[in-house]
Length: 278
Image 1: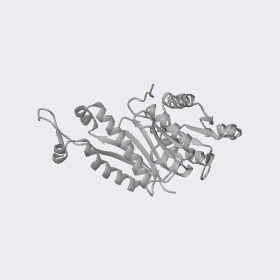
Image 2: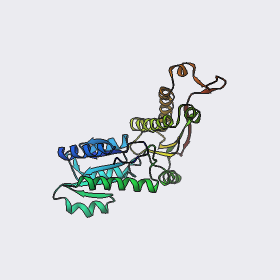
Image 3: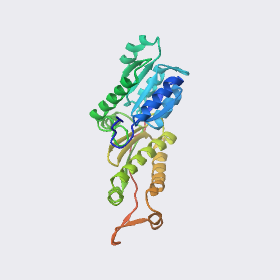
Image 4: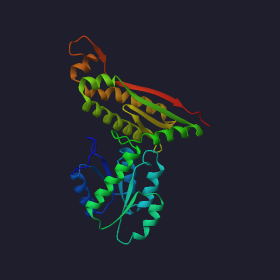
């Protein structure tokens, strides 16, 4: 049976350069309704995870640019990827690494050759644990709940930060008119846009969280914050119009079926806070 995912295929990232392993995993996991991305090196894998945080990462213990533990350490050190479950795929002869990697905090250790059905069950169970613990938002896959609260609490002891609270004006009006599923597409689009802008304009240490519905939070530094804020607002206000009809975009509002009520189009709703620089 395909993985139940509340209508949104769960994204998995495979960081491995062994062709047989990659082809086998991608084929089976895609058939289970996962969205699979592959990176051949640790460096590419870290960059991909930062740009498009997956629900889970399968990481080889040996990669062309170094041991998998190096990439694992980098992923755990970044705010955007620290919460993602990571399962190691071990080559023959790497079994002695098991205790070291699990002690370092890895979520699982899978020796090769592996039973693909058991591996898929382990992947599902790891994602279900994340869902049960409320660590990532089911709509976007971004950190939520306790992870957002901890990130915000940590700002009290830091300086030089810039926090962006991002919401969507007129979202309820849009969802009422276009339907629940189209509203879900807007939320998915927004999460993707935030990731894309932060990846291109922010820093690897920036945090993106999803509190609830259309309530997102970004934490960056004072040097990057203002530019991030401006670019997010500009891009969202332009690109979100793709969800409207040509006529609505031209007139700049939506109308009720009887034409009696006019409502503005969705726009970014942004509030910022700054921590004093040292």
